[in-house]
Amino acid sequence: MSRRMDDASLLFNAAASVSGTLEEVHEIEWPVCAVHGGDPITRPLDGEVPVGLIDGTVVWWCTRAGHAVAPVGQLTAKIAKTL
Picture 1: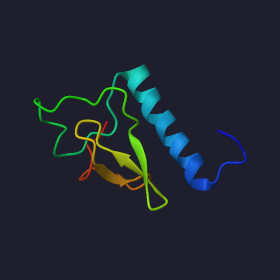
Picture 2 (picture 1 turned 60 degrees about the vertical axis):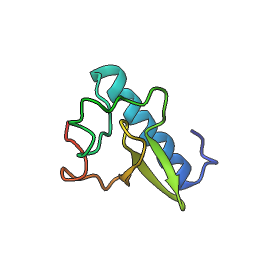
Picture 3 (picture 1 turned 90 degrees about the horizontal axis):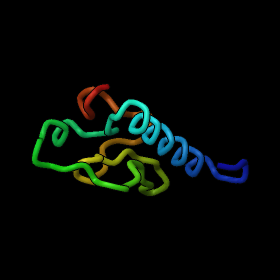
């Protein structure tokens, strides 16, 4: 991360760092959507970054199925599993 990055790039990198820290320290996949979180058949996506950029908006990706869950900062208990 650098001061030259735009807001979306800074948020993208910060969100990826949060997810990576949760995975490394607490062994938690983040985020897992409410649909795929309880599905034992859906396997975690190895090596996938759990954030993406859609039309300039940074979004969380479901770590189980690889689809957009919600914009970063707008997750709710109804959208994603809580920690």
